[in-house]
Length: 216
Length: 221
Image: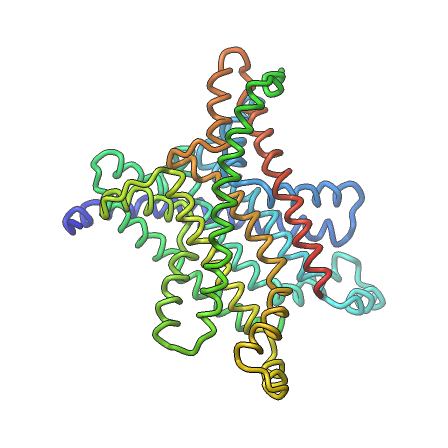
């Protein structure tokens, strides 16, 4: 291991880490939105939509992210839908993560006792008000550990975007290995970069799991 | 928009060959992960602090790193740093075995620790030895809790083996790309249909496993 090489490659990894973080953040934010929407559609048993939502959840969870990404990036342009690499990467994580987040929200929403729904209804709250003020706040505590686990999962999955030549951490490492054969240095920086992003998230995950262990 | 190239005999047989590589990597890794994961999980419940610390660092490293990073470390790293030239497929099996056994080890640990203290006490009160208590009382209960998440782990491994193409393994996704390239001029919509077909193929394997896992979970609770 040549430390001077590590030093000279470090700035490349800083830039690449930004790409990984931006793509992950975008994907996570959209996945949370999609997940909540899908979970509520299924909770309310909205006709037609809830069947579509159920199929979406199964499909997003049971296909590889790499195939989803390639379909978005290489397949959809054939239908005239052209997305940039960044947009594709974020869309892929949103599609994949949406299914996982939906399941996290759904099991938490279902864990809220029926009596809570009934009480809200008796008090004259609309279903929207009941969800917003009564059901969701209780479900959130229950859902938090699974949501954090999904965030970690999505950040890890973001490494596949190197497959469509988006210059994330993985791509930069591959590039250095291919061009200059400084494999040890590139792998070292790659591991350190992911550790800097993922270890704090993992510690947070362990903390919330303990904190919310009883769902309160 | 025609997609009839997908139904030609040669395309199908090539995809099946690719699929066999995907399944071979998955099954070999799962088969190796089972004993190693159980061993790791059991070791984790021992009270030896040094053993626990070493295992903890190993498990956390494997579980926190993206699988693609692990593939790169084993495929490129071991060649440069250790002088070991693994084929892409061997490197993939090593990575998925390490990952699978780490995940399974954690599941085993959680399952064993979830068995209430009273079960041990009762077993000892009935004059069972430590070994007997573990094998006949604790383990059967732990396995029941272990089954649903373990089946889920298999689907995760199958899905994640698609990453092996990025280190040059010719598995089913790579074969799909070759088919797209082969029909590039005759079938301009090839990419659309092929990736959709690949998605359906994985779905056909993983969805039944997910349903099985859910069914097992419902049955055990």
